[in-house]
Length: 335
Image (cartoon, rainbow, N blue to C red; front, top):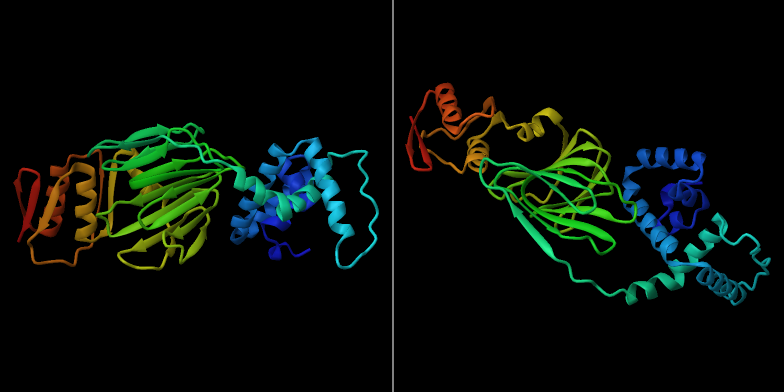
């Protein structure tokens, strides 16, 4: 069977996929884990299918399932083809076939009504901000952990109450997301939205930086422009980047050690432009750098482990053969 043509509803009605979702059949689990890893472009449909099965598994008891079968029988009896169908055997009601049929019927007639009856529950949000030179770890109520970089803000609900988990980030953070098949986890930034079930990845979205990036360490993530005009899937060691006012997501490979070095207090520059250097130093130390050297074509490389900003500036000036002057929190670079 060509599962590449399946949508979420098709997956949710497939007995083998249901066995994989319920973790009851080792062969089905092995098949679907391998198939999903080979077809990352179907992650969205897989996620949606798991959400459908989660609602069905939690919401429908035996009376509802019996009623679902009666409605399904009626649907078949009144179809245009008028084809005779053998009565459904109900001696063992709660099996995979029953769940597949109930899922199909739910998709056709019941899920929409159920969703309309859901009443939104007001959420209490927490906004956490790190000052310059500070990193911290935040643990969410679902067990997910976020390491927040300096000059960064994370907005998140005190408790996830709906069928999704969403947070907002301005700045940089390393995310270790607890897996929850019934609720996707989304990180929203000013340019990119990142959606996962459970994985590890780094998001850098400073407003004063030249680009916004999502770097995947483990698992698989879907990265989408905030205006929903482009969407890609990342594999481990792949990084998605949007630069300036671009409306295109670029994809490349990266070094995990370099991208996540900030978690250990290390600042790394690799062929960095002046704008990149100024942005990183400002976000790390709150120091503004002004370039009056007349040279805007910078390609500077260097690594600094838990170093004060004066030492960094001195190293840069030595390498560039330039001078500097400090006035409060402003450093001016001169020829």
